[in-house]
Length: 515
Image 1 (cartoon, rainbow, N blue to C red):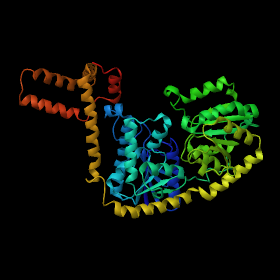
Image 2 (cartoon, rainbow, N blue to C red):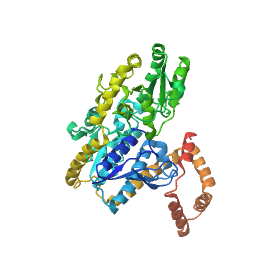
Image 3 (cartoon, rainbow, N blue to C red):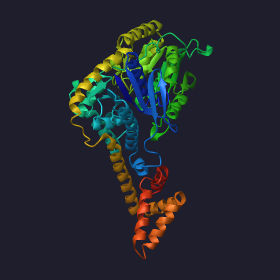
Image 4 (tube, one colour):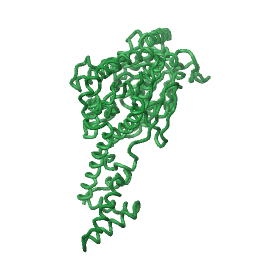
């Protein structure tokens, strides 16, 4: 089977989180069982497009469809939607090119940010959509401070359109599948449960250990891996530190992950955490480490005694599965899909989300009981080998692909987009350019300040166009004729695809738009 994975995230260039991790494990699992896999992913920011080989998987890194200088107003008014449109168009353009050269049997995309939107509309190939956490879930539970603005609602709507027009949908947990089925108003059985895969040979108990320096001997090492943000529950883990250190003086916390601007007032979450740590006199018991590449993570999991996954919500956190695969005792929460991966009391411990005392108590109990840590770790490893090996998950996924191919034979007769697939990007460009122009015209009509800044920008950045428009304005006061119409037509042509840059327009509007 020739399979295309559309995923804006793929390690190492864009290995931002769970989507990237899943995409690579699935790609390699499919390759291991004999399928041809092509990945189309975004290029790293400010790098050129390229094609690389990832252990037998062909990865196409593609550049942004819309340059940063285009669609300034769209980016200003609805930045999330603009990103969705851009990333979806970027991946689609390369997919259509490759599909024409040698057709794919199936295409697989995440639901998040609607990367399958164009394949869903055009019905050029069987489409499977994999659930992670849709935007509608972020809105419903105010995750990452996402609220029901038009921008976020638009993203959620586009995701829904893609999912409803997919030939198959998979979910890594029943918890997430239940939410999405309700949100889409579709039967729960339509969504197939396919758990997250892991490479149990790479994430294994034996091998290098990064946290094994002489000054770390004798510590009980407690590990957190994930972005520093509210949804990952890091705040509750940090608040448990004073109680844990008081009961277990040799306990030391290692926090691996990138900072985010998800603190109060959209400020650094890490700074917020450190304020609490300093106030609690626990600085010597915590070490912060920036995000570690996927291939280097096993050495950190092997080094720890306890891995903590205190998520407020996660459909199925990879940090839980990675620690289990490395044979480590894991403490997770009952929120989301984590409880479907950990068997409480057998292959790990579960505590309520957002509650510091039960979390601290669970950490203390395991920190003081080495035998229990080993029992849970051994059972966790055994569960991974039975249930989550990536070759087995790949086989389950291929079964879903075959169902998608059968469904496609019927559904392709009723595409939502009735023109040629080659036209869809041109139509999308027309719509987005019209929106951009509409907002510009509205501000130009309503705000003298915006008008002045716009003309100053024109004079500085495009002096010849500015001069032509100025001449046309003055000449038009005294006469009209074919020569002026020609000049006006030429000016319009120059303006069509070259509006002011995003940064300059943002500065213009943020300076005030009142008359």
